Length: 265
Image (tube, rainbow, N blue to C red):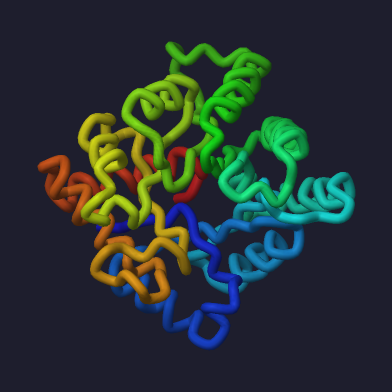
């Protein structure tokens, strides 16, 4: 059994003193691949440096919807320059967020559309952040798919993942039809997280990915503690409980999904 944590922020200060131990614990728990996701040009470069230092790590580069940037054009140009790096496997974390609107929704939409274009030009998948903006996000993603002339009914390369998915089953089906995976985080282990639990039970497993969002969203057994990739096993176990699948079967499926999306061997 091997697992891939498809979303973490291991460059953050929370991991400053013990990153090697964090990675060792992850490997001990069969988490043998970890994607470190940037939120601006600076953290994207940090993600790449970590991926250069550790063979188990990969990088995603992008500008988060609420990252406060002085010159967004210059920032996006820096992101573009990072895309050819061999350890960059996605553009992200990009998207929309109206829960904490540090950047106006209009400006968020512009930076999202620009980064979708960058991803398309570089032939990279995208890692999408959504908070309280599903209708607006779906509209932009639909337009993106139509521009790419993607036929959802024809076999083709998947486009990305909606990370730490929090919408209902109907929305999950709609984004899957567009060509996106559903990212399942430690939130699924929370007793009151009925919406995402229903999604995990209802959606075919070939569309699910595992993630921690470390250091955030620690699973229920570790609530109140810093999250880390090793804790992915708690999310996997909850998904096993919900679906009735075996641990090995589900682990192999979600790992294969991540490998297919991000091109990780």
